[in-house]
Image (cartoon, rainbow, N blue to C red; front, side):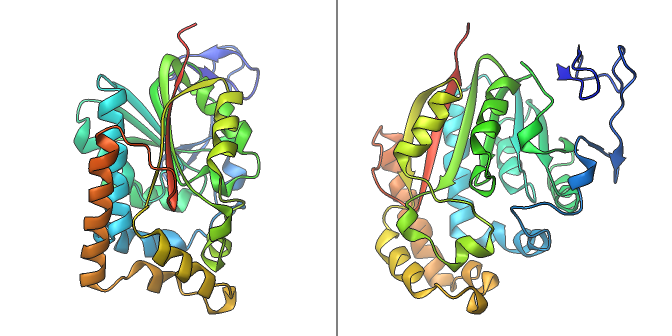
Length: 290
């Protein structure tokens, strides 16, 4: 269902307009725009970063292994998922992995910047894409699972986003998140990415529970490379000298070694081990059925 921004009436998500007040969201580049005033510029991300990401994600160890972890978690905790909403889909790299793992699922993905939707739509043409502010999600009781992968750390009002995600899933549905972890790792990389925060596990767990969600699983990842990551972040504190492309273009032997290390972590995670420390954290949660 859609909660009409014009009159707050609920109407079917397949309808183009609200029958009560006639509200119809505009379209930008063919996509429904729920927050058109933010489509070209908004706080929390650099729109020009989409093109850089689109060309580098598929070969980078971190993006590849995060996809593997996300799709494993979806299959483990929500094996019968029939519908999925991704908040902040970026270039669609995660969504492409979800599409392969759940080929029959209805996929909807959002991005506040309309520029990102063009890249995502090319990667996953079978999905529906919308321009949307995560703080004002119009869907209610609509999806089996809602996911946000390295998104909520960009938004000051993260608790509003989590509450909106809970509202968008059906009773008994799931919410899955990944976020950067450990405030001590803050560096120019976070500043360039317009992060508002890096989380502690306790902070994230508290906010997820306050949103009305039950945590099913929480684990760190990017654990084995953490010592090297700490040294790199401490040496990388000057934003004026930060090169985001260099951070993503790891030499091939190093990239392969890091991917192997993270896949070893995944063996432990799949076996039930919840890793206490790591550069990132994955949380799987569920809305109660009542």
